[in-house]
Image (cartoon, rainbow, N blue to C red; front, top):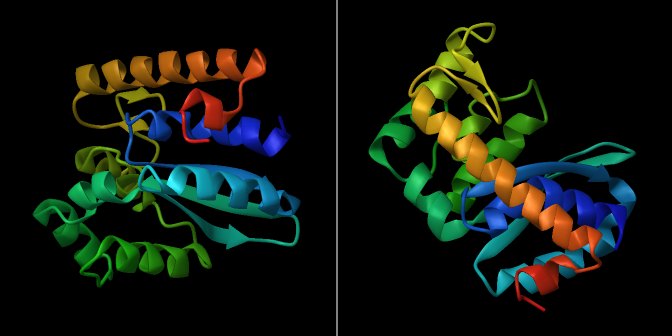
Length: 178
């Protein structure tokens, strides 16, 4: 298994497993073939792969499940939040296009909603990045108990996926998308 596939499994497996609507991973730019192969495999299950940012050596890959992400991004509360931050969209793909444009400049901390983080936590981080009650996959400003449960689920899921990869299984085999 390539280093890129392992990184995608480690950082995005929780999305493939249905625990999050989307994930990000940074890869070497030369890993395009692995990304394209996995994108073809996972497309059948409703996943899309988008390069949000590229440099000469690195690329930031965003993997999302369109239906699940749509439930987040098209909710009234998130649309109002993103609208106030200058986003204009009526579909998931338009919202992601807005995000991709912003990735070219200063890092857009509203990306948290694109990763399925609770809106209260994303708002809290933007308003007070050094605060928060708990820090795990994201900084928690709202419901600590729910976040701690999510962090534990993500940790267990990621560890299980890594064990399968360490035993020689590909992501296509683990998620039965081959």
